[in-house]
Length: 295
Image (tube, rainbow, N blue to C red; front, side, top):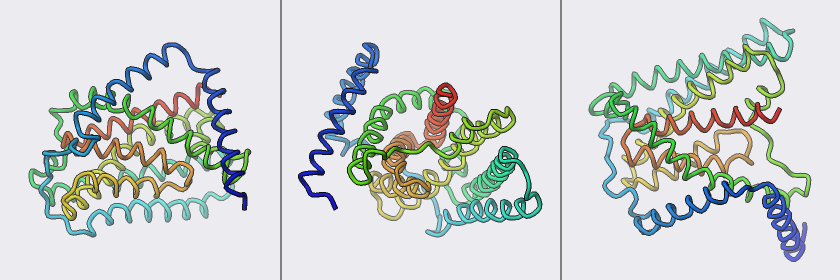
């Protein structure tokens, strides 16, 4: 177990290393963008009393969901996917790795679509205003897309900071060789060059996953929590923590939590589920493009 002094020394060394590496890659344009972001973030913090008043008066979503209802599509999603993978593995045991990855992702997509249909059915029956009350109003799509770009612009530097801090803490605890592994889907899309697999992963990451996860974690879980505790920020924080922790790699949790808070905030502020769906989709799309560009 390293002493406190040695830990502080490692932290200082890592901070200096990160600063040197960052300074060597940063451009003037990036500095300007960061200063613009800092200016607007500071204005938002002052205007909202450090965020405390940011969700005052945010629209409520009247519903009659029992507390267990969000767990039904979550259970269907996991069970459908897990059982179908086991069955496919027993029927097709000798597939090449990329074909096995294709089958697994195809089953993941089918399970996701199944769970999404269940969520839509439940929302129609348990939300006042049916799907519009759930936050799916097609008339605001054009407005929400522009707002999603703006929201993602403001949260992106916070994601970078979360990743840097996670790496720093990881190096202190597990040593200098620690690094944050890529998401499994990004590893697949960069490892295998087959176009069919890449297209399937893109569809799942950019379309199916954002719709399913936002409908489930923001639309159902966050709404259920807010209906119970009556405090929008607390419901955002709890649902964001749950969202982060369902992902298998703990090193991803801090950045995912930051992203999820942005998603939850956008849902509470606008009352529209399209806004977090667009943020999620744009984030996943840019991550895929960046991963492919680095190959």
